[in-house]
Length: 321
Image 1 (tube, rainbow, N blue to C red):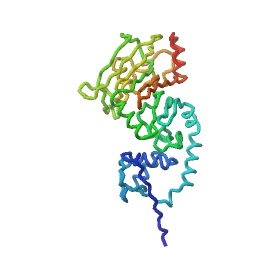
Image 2 (image 1 turned 90 degrees about the vertical axis):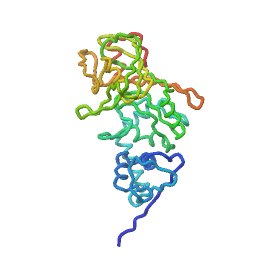
Image 3 (image 1 turned 180 degrees about the vertical axis):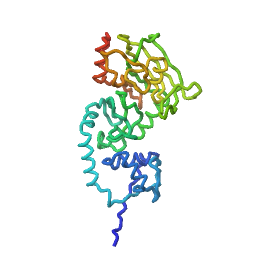
Image 4 (image 1 turned 120 degrees about the vertical axis):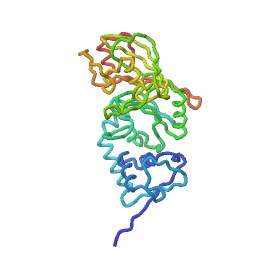
């Protein structure tokens, strides 16, 4: 006699309405990786209203999510979450050590170099994967923006759907002020400058890259200020007004001053043997905005390799910590 499958269902909470199915399941079953959740949706393990849907399906109030309770149990989750904690113990500890600020609405992280914000092909560990671990008592925590894997610095996380929507709107309206630090190749002609060139995604030699496209309607604006120039390298403060993907990297490359260590957009061979160009020198240093009539201002200290480069090229009056 075939054993009858026991089906369980998930209730749709108010804050889940309009959220992707894979995101909801990741918060509920935080022992499973993002990629695993997507695979289970694809094979129909998780269904919505008894039918298969795609992982990016956005749920509504009337939906019913069902799955086989024989295969997924709370004990299995506890075992899996323990294995994730063990497997990524060092990375998780590093992220927790880099929490800058936390209250009932926000969690702010100084993201280390080399850690992706979200999952993807050939990506195992990422910030999105461990959100339930970073904030164990809050199932609504979510990303509100992204920075590149090899960019270090400030990353904002919202603890409620309302806060997430408000911050997303602030980003769209360019009401969030950001300051980056970058070390670039060469000496710039202007101490203070502005780059206003549209940036679009294109496929070049089989690889996706962001490029300058004068015909694009997607505006992109980056201002910069030169702090110092030594030994063929310049330290810049960079102020992106808009937030296009790879905007700072592409804009600086477009004026022939690519970022040190940016292998995707830097075609210049740095011959300064004193300086390591193995890592990209771009850091999200400061962010400020007004949320619910409260002013927020955060700073993120530089990674050690960035500080070592500043020291090696002997930049004076660089008091960045």
